[in-house]
Length: 413
Image (cartoon, rainbow, N blue to C red):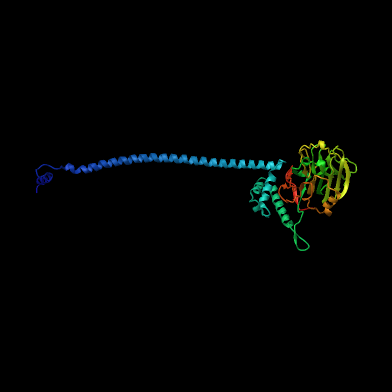
């Protein structure tokens, strides 16, 4: 078949039954052109996305860089915060330690000690367990040496308490020991006990008896076992002086015995217990002189008349101290000594009562005696409070003008 005929047949294939053309050869390539256009559109989209992606990557890089800078600043801030915290803590702890070490009137140690000992009770603890008590741990942080001494003292006190709770009688029966503890004072450390007991409250100018047991650990010039000096006419203090020949140093009302001829006491040995009683039979209605008697170990060693005018019993509200004298609110005339079983009555006791109370050198229970207005037995054995057993509530508080406090001791009469 000739080429011309073949082309004619091919052309006829593009016509319908009426002889009209239905499509041209160009129509055959229309889908290809469409696909090519779509392809070009897709390429543009891809190019745009690539451009956007590049820009996004740049933004991500910038943000990452900023994040890194922020993290660096944060680490620096934390480091600075830690340094400031540590420095502040050290300054604070050093300041607290300085207060404890240098402030001679600090009340922090007695408070921590009292609370911690109450929590510890009668348990003997290792140092690690002892430090689990918050007050002990805090004390250890601010002053380790004081804390370690407190740890040792507390365990020693508990040990003595457990040992002395009961003793065996000759018949094998367990009996309670009457007198387990006393207090020891150190004059060089200015240790004493403050009380709420004011002699004027109980009108002791009208008559009194003071009974106490003392163990001298020194004997020197002008030392008070207890008392106060509210004014020249309201003296109420009891002690000794060796300024001249073992003199008694007792002040009642207007009069002391510092320079009074013959006011001497028999020799005492340091480290041994002695029972002292001072009585006063009270001012008369005319304000005359009246008998003041002083006994040691049941024997009358001095008797003289003194005057404490009831009309001048203005006092000044000064309370008594133990281990020293309260001189208008100031610690004076301290005594390095042991003190135990202090009792005060608002009446004069006679010599038979005094001999019975001395009891051959063994204290007896005075709680049921008539006229009792103050009674401190020092049987607590720990803590910072000395209870008044008279019922008047004039408790005492262990105090110092330095560091440390009066020491509980199982050395008793």
